Length: 230
Image: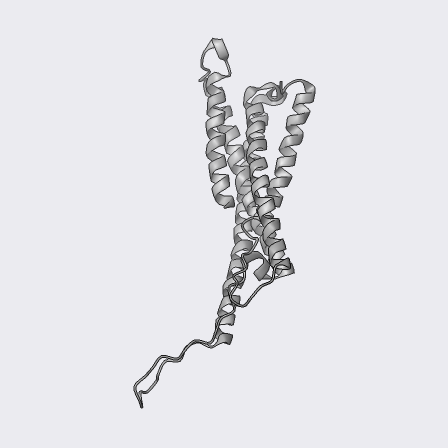
């Protein structure tokens, strides 16, 4: 769910920034100078790096939550396996295959959840480091290219508004979903045949999106109070 939202958000952000590029000069015409095209790319690259960073931090959060609360909370718990029925074999048939025992099935499920937890750790480190470096490189290039007057630009305002809308949407979708799943697993009665969904795809990505949304919102409000966001 989170990956789909981020991918859609990246497309929306790129289209919004390109639209601002084409209309920001108003009656003076379209500004397609190399400098302005570079600025547009740097903002789009900054958003892509930030999205990768958020994805990585959410994966690290899932790893930490699974280590603290159990893998079943994050990745879900399938129904309790039942003893399998042994296949019918002809009399005196050597090496008749035996079905896996309940213990073997539980062990296999635990190993699968352990692998998913380790994958989240590796994924989180990779995306956090790469996304952070990618964002930092584009942010530094942006600052070096335009300096302090960038606070007055339409591209920056569009970047802040798109970030606020995208991560706000992710927050309002993912956080309630994660909390609902967490409360449902903790409160509602569970039978042996019930599949308990995990919160790995919703709760932690939603909480990370909430933090980023608040940061974007603070920048937008600050610009508005300074009279640059009107």
